[in-house]
Image 1 (cartoon, helix red, strand yellow):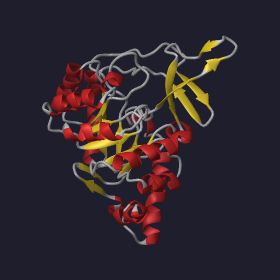
Image 2 (image 1 turned 90 degrees about the vertical axis):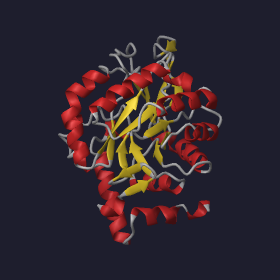
Image 3 (image 1 turned 30 degrees about the horizontal axis):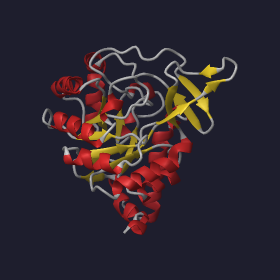
Image 4 (image 1 turned 90 degrees about the horizontal axis):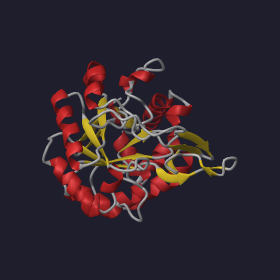
Length: 308
């Protein structure tokens, strides 16, 4: 497994296979399928300071090439999450599997309070700052509206924790490049992208949108080319580690993400299709490196040669 280690800046992983927030619960839900500790890391559900009930149903609709979701950050709040999962999170960390907290807030103070509580618990490896969630009426989306507002948020959080910060960026912008630079200039340690794309589905029988909020987040295999484009664009302007996600469903997809500059990847929607997919792809990637007698770093260099 040493062939697969990731070490770039503050991103240290035993392997590059992570799970995306909102698709893997708190990890325990998948233990019946495989030993989650084999993964490089898990990203838990989007977390807020206080309990959120989320959006009114329907919340999920299957569409061509993916799904639309309008969950609305339903979660029990940071304190209860820690109370119910701390022992499990610590066991994952002790095994070398990183535990990433996806942090959400309606204002800068809420982000800071969530992180303060998380720092005290000391059971998280990294904080992923969600500035791009597209299915809430207020909160994260406002912080990714301009590079300037994003810079102020990241700078505010950076002063309040020594833990590594991963900034999760939205694809719903003309260019991610200025947002990547703003994050880096404000003290971010890593970039993750892409979050879901905005989409709408119409119920033709009712003659109105299927979702109460009208739009929802679209994810799944069909967004992969868009994800690859944004990761390529991000890599051109930063040397920070990048966690790529968006439509990954097989080993070739992972190699494509490495080809455009991703240092690690996260499996999202496909966890719903095949709950073992993250473990299966980890096994396939390990066999790929072993059969070619190459480390992960050398594989990345080979596939990224065209970018030089």
